[in-house]
Length: 509
Image (tube, rainbow, N blue to C red; front, side, top):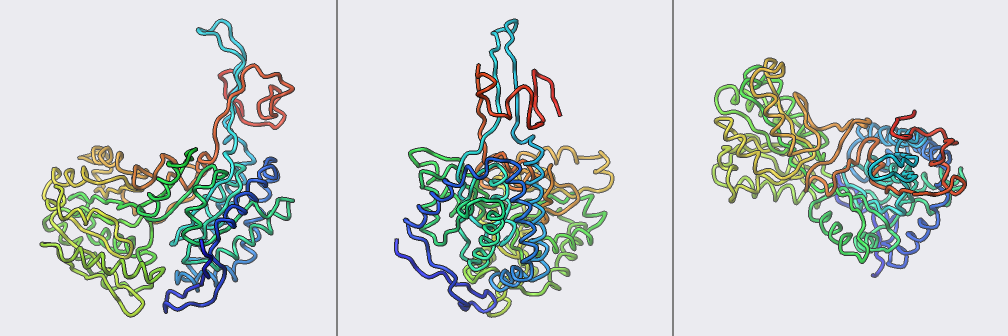
């Protein structure tokens, strides 16, 4: 594997800005993984790793101006968006520090012997331990929150797992800066720099998932790239968990009553959601079922007006821009597909937002229109006009798994009148997060959040956002008949660490 220079590129012009690194060789990937593996013991103390996470957040905030400037130069996402994303990233780090302090994620369960049970119960003690080195594959569209210091890294470090991050080629310079911040935070607590490794290059990413000391992987990106890595993880002599977020259409259903009640508001809201961040969100609504007739016509007019007023924007790189333009053109060429506002090239380096319309019955059966049921990354959505509930259900039945599914109901439907509950039941098998009268863009970092869904939305049943994301990097282990003196402190009767636990079938806090 020959090393090649890694350049920072300005997406506003497509020109190289500066060389920031070189692609990692197989030997360099091996060295990074081994350094991370050797750093495992430094994360064993929960107090130390919680303090490390908080220091990382503090140092990222202190470097905000430099980091946001670097991120904007490489992504063109803008200082306002990037400042908010950095704040979210710091919040995630501190949130996982709190989870580590609390200790409930260890899931401690203790059963004393019970000879009266059938069959008899021996002395059993169960908790969760870290898996080992985690490979993290950065996302293009979230250079902070799903990258070097993002949720996969924060949750893995919280679990006690060192990480080796494969930097995304769209923001290599920023990746180097953030990795340096994390390593400086680690040094404050006596943690080796190898606890956060960083490699560049496509081949390095392949080598990483195959390395025998890598115990799990987290990925956010395309279906094609994610599936290739997922298959590689499964084909290893010792397969490893691969938690991948691959792609999502994020369907939206607008009931006829909702469209009649607030067509303008729904149309405007949809326009804002599908064009947010130039349509570069994994939860962008990509398929919207809108009723035929006057109520639906009013919604489409509102959407037309709002999208027409949206400025052209810069995508993360020119490859994505080319794919967006080609994908839209292929869809527009389908018979009976109309484009009230045509998306496409907005200028030499920008794209314009738009949407397509098609009769829902075209999507109800397998055929050429299946292309409209695939994600198109960028500021475009497909509006499918349905005549009745059966048509809408037929389209929904053909959808793959999604991160989100949304329904807009009228006030009466939301109060329990009509098919509201039935529609929710139809959407639940399709997605990991089901919304009512809202928009999917904007993923709150909260304990109850679930950011995942049936394949191809994700390759596992876990979430990459929220406190339970830490569970991806741990495995349960039970001790039977072990003397108290030999047990880890987490499993001793006197509970020296003060952990929440289930003790002889009773929950203790």
